Image (cartoon, rainbow, N blue to C red; front, side):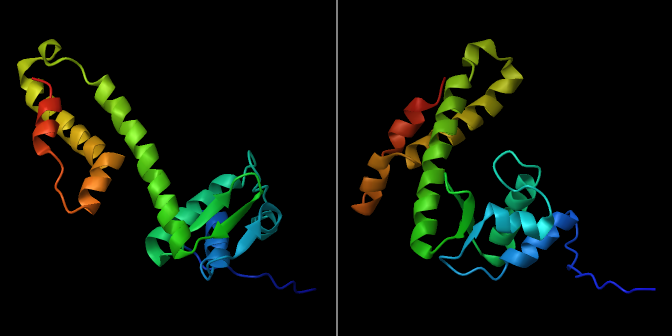
Length: 165
């Protein structure tokens, strides 16, 4: 009887085998490292390209590594690969996330119903939600960033004026 040696991957509780394999392959990434979709596909034996059934495992492994190991991998648009980000690249990525978040906040603010349309017991919840959204929107503006860089506090009165009455 022949014995075939198989490589064992460490189990990561709560994750699929494919994700655990990718975590193991990516956890020692250094800024500037680039791995192609073909390489990732060979690691988990699934298609990791755009639309492939292995793509979700790559995303899951990247999220896990960022949260637990502080290693940031990001897709390189149009290149069919992922890259381990340097500190400067991580800053630029974070700025982009802020811009996307601001768009979602503005949509949330536009979606808020008029206070008169709400039952009285729902109004305090709506006011708190509007205040949170308004604060996030205000602090994500370029103008507020410039004020903070100049040592000025943003106009909180303007924030309170945005809260529906």
